[in-house]
Image (cartoon, rainbow, N blue to C red; front, top):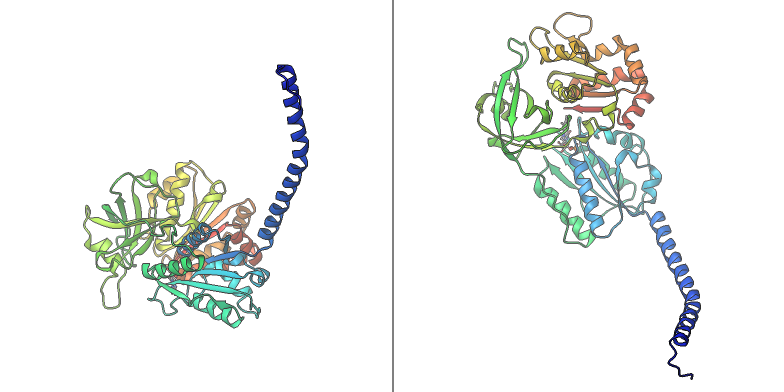
Length: 454
Ligand SMILES: Cc1cc2nc3c(=O)[nH]c(=O)nc-3n(C[C@H](O)[C@H](O)[C@H](O)COP(=O)(O)O)c2cc1C
């Protein structure tokens, strides 16, 4: 051992020791880095090839979609890789590879799939597809007022069973978004995921909005009275987008909210609604429409909450031309978009609309004419009781086939709002005739054909 007090020599010794240490350490560090990289790449390969959980939804107005997002969030919180997928994006190979799929689906028409599930129902649920490896669960959304309660959820469950798939727990049917059934799903999920700290799933609370104005839009009409309502929020104006909905519960049926399209934008300062008064055969009025248009006084509180309706928003179509098609109270959802376009001083809007008589049922006539005057809107109307050539809105489409094709070729998006009975199927068929089935399907898949029909 060499003893020295010479600082230069001491530094030299220290430097040599450090260099020696580094030389010994380098191979170790290199080996460790290699080992870690190997572990990481194995994990990545496993993640890429592991099917994980799939949460598939088919939703028309967003209830099932919202619950599906919350389901994915709960699984991820528990460390379970989960992938959110629209039902129609699932193919036979996905199902045959998957080990766990949670389905959240609503029902429309007469026990049918929502638009976004129709392709899946037509393509897969009509075939045999052995799925012995698949474990699944179904949350079926519906309304027991319909004859085919949760019809599509039931059909999907039955089909999966028939393919040999195993249910993780019995199907849960949700009647009008009932909290108890949703709580049951959440509980099953926490159980499966082994977590008790699931995020809060409660929908936003209802607030007391004030009915600030109401006016009859169609005096003298042969049809049922239609009212324009304005509602003011209790506090600062919340944000929404054109295409969104409100849910309103009448005091006598607080557990059965009704949905209405919002006919205004936040810049209007109020939520505008269009409410048609429903009458039963015995002359009594519909609970919600009777309360909103007859009983509630201007100045009275209305229990209301906003609901995002992503499927009918402008979103990526905001920069495109718009072809707006509708009938009756469907003008409400279309007017929301028109007001958004007017606020942005954006033209390229074409409205095709159907009602009974031009003299009585031309809702928002002055407003639409003013937009046309300003060069922001073109419109074509079909009056079923005026004796013209085009009686219904679907008759307008073949009559304007060239313009329709040229607008679509130019990138336009199509929005349809109004009644399911008669109008929606008629418009769909007329569009398919003019544009071709494949082109219409492609527009729907690209989010350029959107419907809010009821
Ligand atoms: C036009 C229309 C038709 C419907 N048909 C049915 C039906 O046949 N059976 C059913 O259980 N629910 C039916 N419903 C209720 C919806 O399934 C229910 O409102 C559901 O919560 C909607 O979920 P979503 O927002 O995910 O589409 C219908 C609703 C509408 C507006």
